[in-house]
Amino acid sequence: MKFRFIRNVIFKGLVLFLLFNFVFTAVPPVFLGKGSLYNHLYAGRLRFPFGEDSSQSYNLSLFNLDAMFASHVIAKGPKPESEYRIIVIGDSSVWGTLLQPEDTLAGQLGALGITHCSKAVRVYNLGYPTISLAKDLMVLDYAMRYQPDLIIWLVSLEAFPADNQLSSPIVANNAARMDGLITRYNLPLDPNDPALLHPGFWDSTLIGQRRALADLFRLQMYGLMWNATGIDQTYPADYQRAQTDFDSDTSYRDMHPPRLDASRLEFGLIGAASRIAKNTPLIIINEPMLISAGKNSDLRYNFFYPRWAYDQWREIMSINANQGNWNYLDLWNIIPADEFTNSAIHLTPAGEAKLTGQVEPVIVNQRCP
Image (cartoon, rainbow, N blue to C red):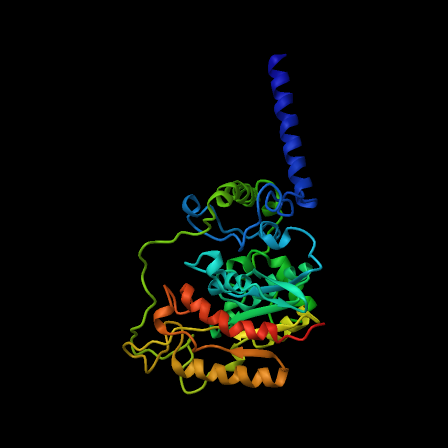
């Protein structure tokens, strides 16, 4: 009798567990990202969660865009009538590698205390590490629900290659979102690209989602320590400076001089951003980069770019900007080489201040609606 009772309990428990897994795939619970302790129990983050050493930075990388936005200060509540809202999107240089939040472009612009259209300017950092136009489009599409008045998008050549678009982990793990973007905006991307990770049935069950659920829980728990310390990345006392000496290789992604193959670059995604933004002004900035004076610097500007490829890309960008009537600002060479940190695109606080000084006039010169 006792054995039968135990057997029945185990059997019923197994049935309930399997049933819950099936229900989980059909009706994802609200706690899968949309609910958050941020902006409620503690303040919203000043930039998206991203990090590898959670024990020191009270941060982590995850792929749930709902959770990322819910943890951000932009999701605090309805947009105030008195706020002129600016969002800044782009790569790790915008997010602010090795920078405190207040030292980033968004942080320094916000600290200026400027007003525009009789409203207080508030600037939100929506940058995210990894370089991909498609990643930025996905962030921008989501961010439009927060009613920005101005969008500032920092880009560089490395964001344009076709084979860079879907390989970013945040893109690859949001295949359904990218499928929707590709369809709605007729993006020149393949929804069947193997880089996009379309989850199967079992991947969508409670068991298959256990890592994602654990990450969501950890993000909420780290919020308490982040709120107490303000630390959201590690700041090593010493780090390897950006490379300034190079070998004689002048290839760029298997392309060789004299001509850059523009057909392998996704300029069409810039036009898609304009369609996503609709009537919201969009400023596209060619972000500053390190210009080396070291060995073979006559062949390469930096680790990323041989001179011939980058120069031709700038020419093509200028032509496209004129033809597409883009609001385009080319700031590629405004920062001295000693104001870069561990990468050819990561700036020091002083470098960010110089960039801020170039961007501020563009903001105040925007036409009011």
